[in-house]
Image (cartoon, rainbow, N blue to C red; front, top):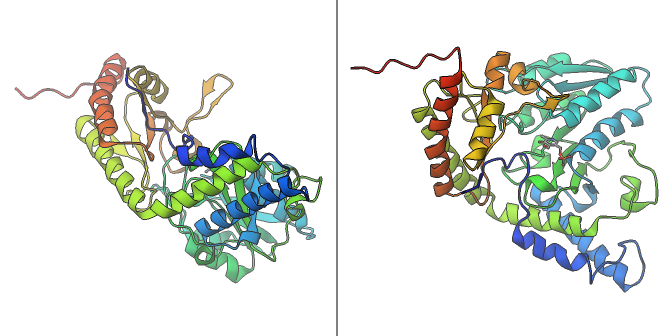
Length: 391
Ligand code: PLP
């Protein structure tokens, strides 16, 4: 059976060039990057080269890049680190209701420690109104954290506007760019962000490596304490092979950003248009314009998303819902309900996220399978009435 992967926002395969760049650092060039001898010098220079490549992807300076274990650690370091570095008696953080759990759960944990958090809502198109961020500002606001692209919808937030609000108010600004890095252009100075998170496994590097951009001069406390690696921002012997992989992935993404963006967007549009044409009542969730080129989130009324995913998987098509499965119960996506979808519509929505190896043939195969699978599930639904066929 064919297997078509349309779930690149969950994770991506490691690019073969990335793997090739990493391999020597497992066996031949295995030195500790902190060692003074030549084994250490070799890996130190590989780590520093990767730092330059990651910095170049986002328009930063290499000294402002700290390697981490991934997006979750980068988000947590930014959020807890800024709050911990502040001596104010009263602390306030602004975020949005559609963030990834790596941000939302960090904020919830802060609330338990007495920090106040404002969760700004997003509109039906998945976009946050910068005016609402401005209105949420208080004299004790320390940090604004707003994601760049949403993982479920692909919707891109107006970071430049949020950045100028933050800089005018002299409040730190963090963005979770895990879903945008390597897909669309990022310029830390244009966005005026002080902190930016990215993750290797969303851009064809391995899982378990990521980076946090920290603008120089930012007052931040580390999450971890240990040896003095990475100037104490993130102690722990560097994951050299992973870091080299992230550096190579950043170089590859940067070299093909525009061309690859338009190639993927046209495949995504072909998939989306095909589904809308072949599946009655299907509609797209979130903005049609301000979104990453690879993502579409489609509401397919009268089906259970989970059932649809399983049925599609049996026909060789892998996609996902945004729903998190906890304690056996499938909760509707917090992102889709936050932008105003009814729980049953949120449960009936699917995310398709395309990637570097997706071809027109993959899209056409998915389109040959999806309508029939939906029709079959709808036939089993007690609430679905098949449109009458004109005689
Ligand atoms: N932030 C966003 C927007 C994500 O999509 C993800 C992963 O899905 C993360 C953070 C967490 O990244 P990681 O899996 O590297 O911890």
